[in-house]
Length: 263
Image 1: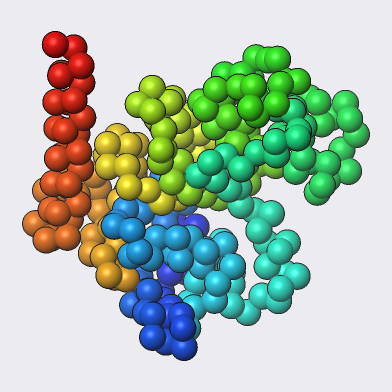
Image 2: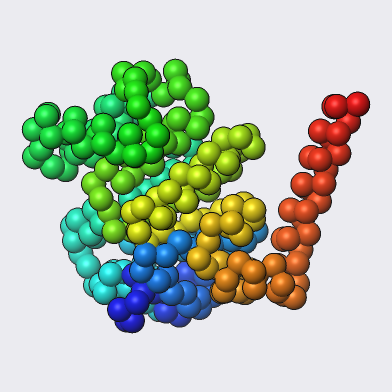
């Protein structure tokens, strides 16, 4: 494994239903250390399955997954659980505990996995929330704060233990335009200030073009593209053109609808 890469997938195949449902078909992907990679592609093409391989939740039928120099397939279940402490995970809908306050949600990983006393926990929680633009109050519950604030709390919880790798699962799906911009700004802040190796699975082309150090495009379980954002938009691959054109049509339809509302 190259020392420049935090994660490598080498010839990874994965099928379900006794091999009848082939999801990954020999993918090779390198994720450079300290860089932000977006994995794009239509639904059902293997993005989430790829993420689960990186986490060690799935083992490949063929091929190898190496994370921070470790071949995940040779780790025991207990070793994999411990190894996942090197990851932070930002879930699509933030996945906050409804019956916990903002403070308690972010403190949860520290209380579960460290022996920090309450003074240290308070210091760590307040520090990470402030770094993400939340200056209080921290005693509100998730249903009492905005979608953008819930995203901040979800990201704070993901990075509170200072992971080496940060994974995002569809962070902007279903969000209004204002909140989506807020989330993009948070991802950009994490990228510039924390220098984590970050992987985002998404359908969000504008966010990927703005933020990504590299873009991976999956099509029918294969890597159809790996490169820079400006190279991605110039690709003549048929599936990529359809993907980009569909996004353009959606944007044009939204613009027409907004124009109609203003007349």
